Every structure is written in C-alpha cells, then in structure tokens.
Image 1 (cartoon, one colour):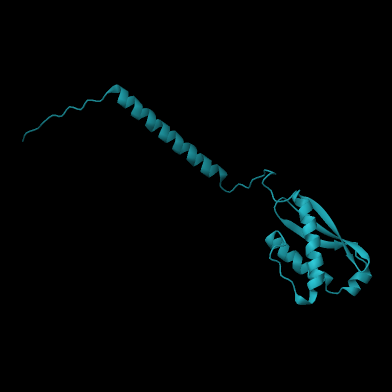
Image 2 (image 1 turned 90 degrees about the vertical axis):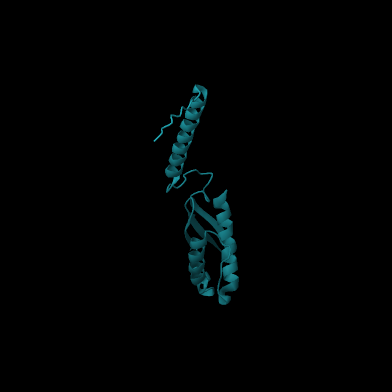
Amino acid sequence: MSSSTKIVVFKLKELVIAGVLALLAVILLVLFIIHITSGAGKKSNDPALSTFTPGVYTASIMLSGNTMDLEVTVDSDNVKSIRLVNTAETVETMYPLLSASIKSLEEQVRQKGSTDGITYSADAKYTSIVLINAIDTALDKARR
C-alpha cells in the first residue's frame, strides 16, 4: 500500500472572508426565524390597519313622516349590533316586516362586515333597501 500525502494550503484572507460570510448567513437566518415567529398569532393593534373606529354610529330614517334612528355598534374590525331606536308604535304597526328585516340584515352584515352582497326577501324589498342605505351611512361614519 502506498500512501500519498496531500498538502492543502489555505490563504488566511480566504478563510476570514468565508468565516464572515458564514457568520452573516447564520445571523440572517436567526433574524428571519425571530421575525416569522414573533408575528404569528398576533393581531395588529395599529389603528391605521383597523376597519372601523370603535363606537356607536347612527343614521336617520324617515318612514311615513316618522323619523327614527338606526344605530350601528362597531369595534375596530367587526359590526357588533344593528338596531332601530326611537321607533314609534305606529311605524311598527304600519311596517310589520321592519323588525324581521333588521334582524336578517344585521346577521348578514355581522358576518360580512359590510352591506356588499346582502340578500333580502322580495316581500320586504323597499324596507330592506331603506335599511341598507341607513346601515351604509352609519358604516361610512365609522370608517372615517
């Protein structure tokens, strides 16, 4: 058996450059992992990124000469509730589908966060259109 000895020569400059590049690669990898894991599962509290300004917003509705208010309660990202306030008994009597329409619309707006793509019954078409316009007005106030 013959053994041959091989001699490998490294220049110090090449070793230093390779070491610095390897160290930078490790640092970048650690920073990337920290960045990815620190943002996971956190919800942003930046008000610039939220959909709504939290609060209660109203829009007025005129039905048969009676004015009532539609009240929309929102937090930073969701519609919490929609209800009619200051309603007279005569309005509820003249518009029996009003309460059913507002409940149906509230459920859909809470799921979608807006009035886009909302469906309503053909029986309460005009009442629903009036309510949707009032909801849009209140949500526009909440977005400012």
